Length: 313
Length: 244
Image (tube, rainbow over all chains, first blue to last red; front, side, top):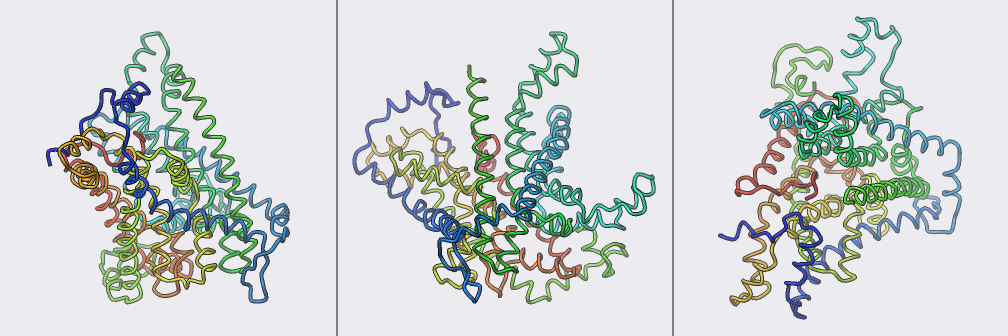
């Protein structure tokens, strides 16, 4: 049990030099030694290949399929489902989902940034307790939270009653069944995914940089813009991805907080699989969603790599 | 909000009329909900065990396996992390239907394991990479076989991270709705799916009680996940965020 604390090699950051050093020092693995790593890798790889990769390929295949009289999916070479994606009705939903998800990411960033900033840099020794107090309520079940939120924002719920009392809302102002309501739901649902990486980035930030900015006669605003913001950009980027991905695929918020004019792509997919029984079309929609996300992720990763390359220069 | 109304004496969801435990009592007398709770616990436990075994093995293999298999495995490990649950749900549903498998507790377990392996692997991989391979080699110089070195040296060193990821997976799976919704049979249904139907078709205050109990459970688990590495006297385990 003395080996619980593994000894680290020279460079704990595992920079290129340390990695090279480690590789050179390690003796060539014997044939039997290498085989054990293959045997360890195989079960998980096979599992993921069957239940993840193969099933995704099946979704792609079914999206070219048709349904028989019973509504069961059949394989085929039908392009109708993919063509349907260009149908204005579906295209609008796609565009709306993208808009909602992007707005949600931006609002989450605007909400989470000051919170993370205040806690990480100004809460002193209470910061761990404080961030825990902020994050813990988000561990309640997502559905239950979304439901509670919809009660709070309902037409005669406490939020609107207060807003009416102070004159910020008219008698007919609604939050539920509007796009704003759906976005409010998504923000509440996923803002914690923004707070955590931002908080981590700010905690790691070298606060002497801020002092240096002040010493160099940067005002608070300039210091913030040219020191704090660039130092936390990676955290913000990670947060945007962590919020955008689930927001784009969500269907609960639109269902609880929105009306028929606020449905998102997730609602369409759910409908095709559980109510409409048009699995091929549902599969085509799923593929479209996946394609949008892959493109977005690809763009983000390229950007992040460029940032990293610049930072290391 | 939900917590508050779970203690409401009246059935109203907007007016609070005094403290009461009647909805908790109702929950513990509701056989359907208790059945769902049982199923959710079962699914979470199996998914936890399955994904930890597969995920830890994969993490060990991936770090040391630089061949083509390692590259492929490393790639398909990352994709689930950027796939929204609804896509995984649709894919699993189609696969089970395609293979002619009736949806039941087992299908939920399989889908949840698939969803969880990536998390375990990502958490464990950085820990494995931080280990010094020389320690293992020293054990083998002292006469241990490769397998013994792994079991007696490497795994104990990884234990805190393994336990932490196990607890995390349990909490994630227990709370998961989307995947469970797509892969569950009709009866029994996981707790989250029951909550969903309950909310959609008229809410019973019992649901507030269930929600509060689940929150208490999640907090305990997350606290445990964070505390485990500390109990073992060293930092680390849940470095998901910093990715170090």
